[in-house]
Structures are given as C-alpha cells and as structure tokens.
Length: 443
Image (cartoon, rainbow, N blue to C red; front, top):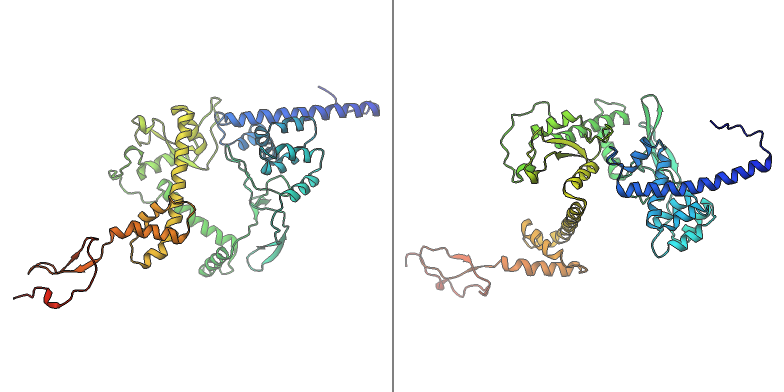
C-alpha cells in the first residue's frame, strides 16, 4: 500500500509528480466521461436495477449528487460534441466550463465556444456566455418564511431554487445555474426536522391563506407545518384512491365493462397489486438488486396483453416507467418501441393543438349558439391550418359547421302535419307572404 507521506521528496520532485498526476487525472476524467456517455447511451443502469443514470452514479459509484450531476451533464454534452473529450484530456476545459457551455452548444457554434472557453476560469466563461447569449435581467425575489410573522429573505438573482436531484433517463436538465450543482428546496436541520423554502404565485398564496382561515378552529395559530400536513393528507388520500383504488371500505368486484378488454385493470386488482409490491418497482437485476424507485410507477403485464395476458394479480406487477419501457424493448424490440413512442408523441401533440384551437374558437362559437361537440369538431379541422389568424380560424369553423346547422323555415303543410320543419340548405329563408298561404284547420 503506497505511503501518502511525501516529506522525503525534494521540491522539484514534488512539483514534477504533481504535474504528472494532474495530466493523468485529466486523461482519466476524459476517459471517465466517455465511459459514462456510453453507459448512458446503452442504458446499462437499467439492467442493474437503477431507474436513472443519476441514481446509478450516486448509489453504485458512490458519487455525491453534485458530482454525479456535473459529470452526467459533461458526458452528455461531450457525446454530442466529441471535441470536448480532447479539450478535457488536454486540460483546456474543466468540467464546470463544460456544464456552463452545454445548454448553448450546437453543431454550428461548438468549435467556437470551446475555443473561447479554453483555459478560462468559471467566472470568465460565465462572462463570455453572458455577452454572447444575454438574458433578461431578473429582479431580486423574496420568500416568506414562517407562519405568524413573515420574514422576508432576499434571494440572489442568479439563484434558481427547486432543481430536482433526479435526472430522468435520456434527459438533460437545461436549467442554467449560477453554480453547477443542483439547488435543494428541502434541507435537514436536525433529527426529523427539515427546512423548506419555496416561492409561490399570488393564487397559491391566496389558497394557502384560505386554508389557514378554514382551519382556524383546529389550528388557531395557523402554523404552516400543520396546515401543509392536513393538505398533504387529503392530497395523498385522493391520489392513492385514483392510482391504486385505496379505500377503507372496498366494494365487491363487478364485471368489467371497459372497451379496452385486457388492458383495463379493476380497482380490486390494482389495490391488491399495489399492496403486494409495497408501492415500489419490482424489477430485479441479475445480481439480485431490486429497483428502489417509487416514482412514475406503472402497472406492467408479465405476459403482455398483445399475447393474451390478462389483468390478474398474478400477471401484474409494479414497474417504474424506465424499467417498464426497458422490458417492453426486450419483448418487442427497441426499434418497434421507438416507433410506438414517436406515434404517441405525435398524437399527444395533435391533441394539444386541438385543445388550443378549441380554446380560441369557443368564445366566438358559443355566442353563435354552437354546442361543445360542434366546436370540438371544428377545432379538429382548424388545428390542421397552421399559421392562420383567429379570424381565419373562425371563418373556417363556420364553413365546416354551417351546412350542419340549416335554418328552420315555416312552409305550407297539409292538415294534421307539423307546420315547421328543418329545410334543406337550398331553401331561401323568408317570412311567409300571408297567413292565407297556410291551410287553416277545419277548412
């Protein structure tokens, strides 16, 4: 085992050794980023029962959250722009500079930005980026802390609270921080005590005050901790009831009438599967490690529905979204699942366009007497018209809907028949010339 006492070395030898180790460290860092980028591309953390690369780096490689965050950002940036590997190995770029550059790098400007950041400190790189990519100036924010007397705590304009420590698979968080480590909105103070700092909008603040007022009989002082506890209890109960049918008085199961066939999961089965799997992903690696994720959980069929699998307790288990997709790729192939996800994204984008168009058209069309189902049909058509104004959308909607809304016209009718009916669109709408034109009853 090498000794770390270097008192016996001469000054020149000590400096030479330091220079050699720094060069080796840079080369090792570049190689580490290359390995990390390839592990990310192959998603090798999934077979090891980790739901994300960040979780793998923290729990398997024993890095701290900040080190994992910085290296993942740098590795993903370098995989898109390989010149970064060489710049890091040669000591021209440090990891903080790579993290700062990553949101701004494109194929067109990568070489220029890397050259501009060469041998520059973190502050100098920030200044360079501010000159090239100016941002809107932000005013100082304030946060209210405490329940009875609000203490206003200034927050620096460069800080960005609320960054999530979790990096989802294949996703690079694009938020730019004044420092490269993620911010934390909840911090431990003592055993079983935590401090939470959050900024909120006016509507949220009004809701919080309303909850405090409604709870004054139970919480006279209106302590935020107790109010939040009540609110979270109600929210958790609602979410658990919706996600896995949690209830203290379960009803007897009824035959399913769902049109989705085997994809429909009855409430009693969802409840049983959730309780059996204890609300945790059930994926287990070859080494016997079970995924610890409790986020983005989904019900997964062991025998796929497409192959005749049923929605039974024995055939269902909980999987996090990452491992659910991982097992689907194993079953159907990566390319097939990629195409399915692409089609799902296209359908979601189409639904979003229709909703936006419906929101635009509704005020005008509702005043003209059109029903919601008609407005929806018009919105589906108008969503296919990109780059048009709201006036043009309304005109297009009226052209679609007007043939379906013919006018009601009074015409001469035989005795005993209705005196009014819906005319075809070829009829002219005009008042009758004389009451004598309608056959009188009893004549």
